[in-house]
Every structure is written in C-alpha cells, then in structure tokens.
Image (cartoon, rainbow, N blue to C red; front, side):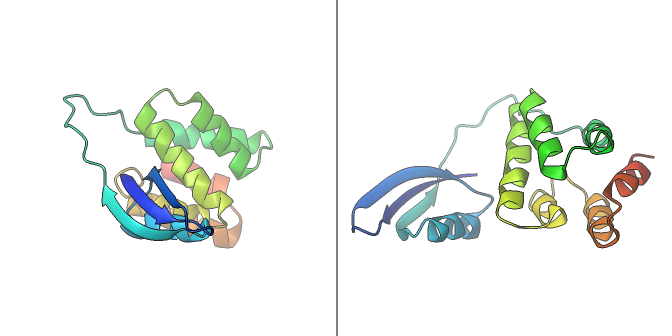
Length: 145
C-alpha cells in the first residue's frame, strides 16, 4: 500500500513523498530508519481498477527458486533474479518487498509472512522450519509435491 508522507528531516526541512509500505506501522518504521519525524501520514486512495494485477504463481515461483538454489545462488541472489524476470507487476512488487525485508535483516519466513494473500500459512511454516534446519530447498520441494 502506498502512503502520502510529510515529515521533518534533521535540518527541520519538510519532506513530502509517497512511500510504499505493508501497513502504517511499516511506513512509520521506514521513516524512523531514515531519521524522519512524521508530520502526517495517510494512505493514497486509488481508483478501483477493473483488472487486478496477477498474483505470484506460488508453485512456479517455488520450482524456480529451488532450481536457482540448486544452481548455487544464494537466497537473495535467487530472489533478485526472480524479481527481475517477473512480468506481473503485482508479483514483482511482492518479491521486491520480500527482498527489502531480507536486506533489512529479517528472516525469509518473516518477510513472507507480511504477504498472507500470496504466501499461505503452511508455506511460511515450512520456510520457518527450514531456516532452523538449513534445508530450504528440501522444504520447498516437499511443499511443491
């Protein structure tokens, strides 16, 4: 979701921008990381579109992710490659948000959990368990099966 922001920077200048965040708390956290003090924060109202952005096809995404991991790419590298190749803007945006969370130091499962409409609870639980065991490829392969 996008939020219209007005904030004060360190030199007490007003900064106005539109910020992409999961929710209001996430928007405030992003601003705090940039050391901005919120003056106002409101969701951007969009006109309803008759066409929705296609969602991420979870089975195909998982198969591609497993293939890239087996090829020796790190999780971040594999997700970057998948985000670049994604043609559906909604799915690409989801992957970019997951990558942003990984860059911030969150776990893969925590990043996925911020997108419950795309990643079901069982998928997230499988990823969370694999983070403890170090067997992400195997967990995704079991989920795909």
